Image 1 (cartoon, rainbow, N blue to C red):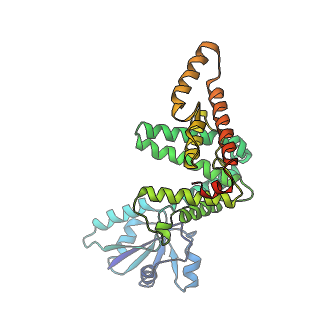
Image 2: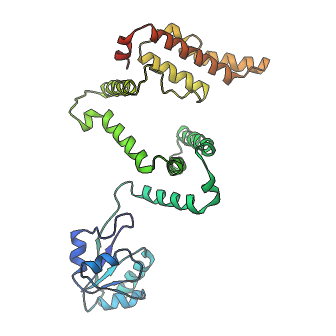
Length: 318
């Protein structure tokens, strides 16, 4: 006779079980070791009696020798291993069959993180008092730590650092009053679907360059719909000066801005930065501030250039 073990996921709403699980649950007496198992009310509603017993590996294995027994498992991996050992020790060991009643889909463990964050925000004094402003330095720090693991090709460490970075996203979403993690996820899902019409729509592309061109065209249309007239709108000016300069130049080049506007930034940014650092060492200049000022000046030149191009430029910018 078999011992049928029905497993379920705590990340799937109780009562949502596979057809095979419902069949198994009706094939013999159903036992469980937890009186608080979340499936119990739903099984009772379906007319399935479940007996709550003291978990006894030897007794469970022995009973399955003479009759079909269904075990409604919870988080009891160690117990099930013990049942397996007990069954092997019997003269006529029963067949043990595992039937997944529900199982995790990819990304399901993110729900655990959301749940943990909810509890921390409620019960931990430190987590409870945090704001977007107090958390901001940690977000930047974790992003740099992710970058370091990539630069060092330490992909085992990357897994952990990505988790720390994800925590910051979930934390900010929990702190927010006007949205939550579902809203954050929905926003990026909608954006990805919208910007990949070759995957989720009927657009055809030949290569990655065409994908990028479509992405930039869609992004430009999104900026226009939000009232953003400049190709540089949305560039975070608070980022490190070197990355700021690089992002401004990249955006401006896509918009067709003349190279002459990039005096002090762009292709000459490495030389400019080197000169600034050298002068800082010699004369006390703030290299970061100097490069940031050059980047801001470049932004102003690009915007002035855009203003002189007329409405046609805004329509054509990519």
